[in-house]
Length: 388
Image 1 (cartoon, helix red, strand yellow):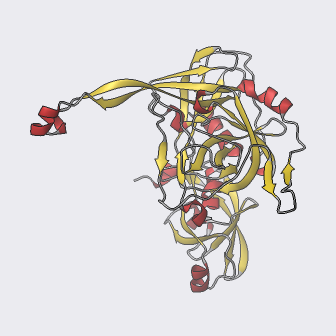
Image 2 (spheres, rainbow, N blue to C red; image 1 turned 135 degrees about the horizontal axis):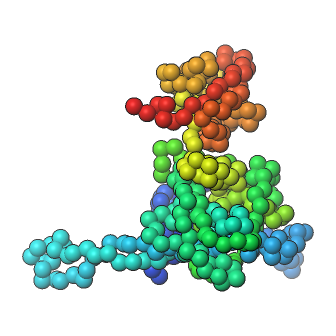
Image 3 (cartoon, rainbow, N blue to C red; image 1 turned 90 degrees about the vertical axis):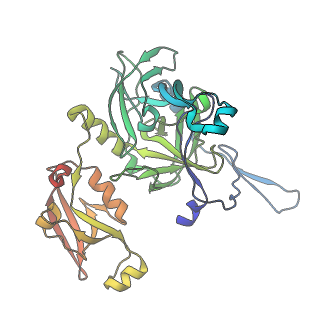
């Protein structure tokens, strides 16, 4: 899978700004693009049979009711922010004094994205990168009503932000269970790509628990739902819903060589979103718990070197002195296999599982030590416990 993403641009699907199409882009390589054929809901393949017959697949699902019920709860988020631009260049002065003589000036620019109404009294979820640096945030409903939004809180580690508008009786989308999603299940992406309001696209769940290293923080939590629903710049913060009309994710990123849809889109799963929203509403910021270990993925080389009988799990490379992990008896060389019954297949899985907890939570940790499975009880502590 690393090779698959090696040639792609990982693009945070932020909004088009100032007509210039300002995207957040991380370039991976210059290798040739892979050819991907797609025409929306139909997956068409050519046949070598006589006559060149085409075989098409059309989903049995009728998405009209789900789209109609969901589209009114997805809003257009417009932001104003100040950007520094250079004044016009004087070639004569530039020749003698260089471009340092140019005086930067502030210019107000506009960007836009999407958001999802999660309560009738005006709480709205969006992406952190949609409202980052914004000096003013406006929200436009599907019925064209416009409100000024207040930023309640953000979490850069998950790229989630919570807004509030002063209104009552707003349409909402209820949270669904992202963990229950199955590979191949149909989902709808709803948002405002390229400022085209109330756009609905459909696709399937292509993968789950995907980490693409696009969130640039030390404590990032990435467990994206990957889908092939058409998602483009401006869809950021919009809804990913299942066929029951439940919110299972917040559309966040695309992988593309062009900056537009290329078949790979990623959404923050609803369980992570709910935890972030609940923490912001209750505490004003996200509560982060720490286990106190440094872990590694198990490679065939590490498996042989450490004498392990598994390639699954998170290998404990270091245990922080005085940490919750040390107090519970976790040691260097252990392999963490489960957290409260949830399977841990990689170091990222462990980071995500702990990211869903709060300080003071007691969790059951299943480890593998010398070929024996052991269950330990761990009481997690706050990240401030380790602050100097």
